[in-house]
Image (cartoon, rainbow, N blue to C red):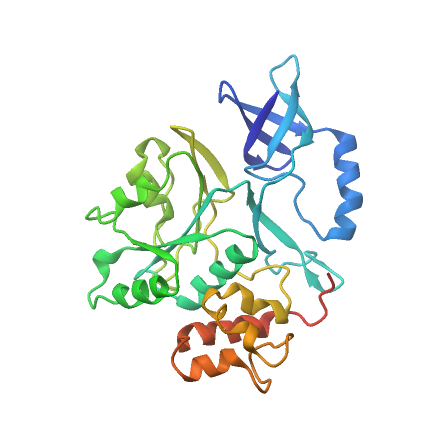
Length: 318
């Protein structure tokens, strides 16, 4: 039998069977886990199978299943694993895979409660671009935008080539536009805690009945409600992947000299630099810096680039 992993809980992998879409609790075949453990030591991977993986499995007499093959991934989205004790290898952070086989990524932000943070948005964008995924940006809670700041950010990201949808659950702004983008796709929603991912999805698909959280009065940040990624079938060959809200995001597996390729507005200038290993920071003859000085690349995006550049480890080996 074949299916797609809808959620992972400890050693249990829940699989939506392709024909019936019934969710079946499965485990991994022992030899499969042993073989992966040997690869993990070399590849720094943290997950054997993830939400979105297409798998082959066989049924047990009690209705549970055993996964014996994970089909080749078309793509996957990842980040550096959070900084916790034991989650490193030779001083390097491990890779945490969010989900696999994704058709569309929606980066969900809010204009207020919590406040819009373009530096965080840019980190999400780099993670998507480096995974070969073209994201759509959602600016949520615009009903709270007293000073209409969302226009600035919508224009900034639209001008460099990203699709931006402005939404509000309270007054329904943008929800029909967003819903029209979802059919026939596996859609992943990703963002900081508290920006309203689950609330938006509940408004579009009430049957999901996802938990929603409040904003902490002390930190002005969101509280975690989704603990692990979950894939839901919502009809019309359409799937939703709801992901845990994050407090920090560091793109994984990027070298300093490659980061500029994931800032899409750098593309017109990056090959004009004097050095092909230019990091667009201090080198002479840098066409990217010149474009910033001429106002062709925004200061906001260039500052994000420099901040991400500072977080990339010098000793990563690929």
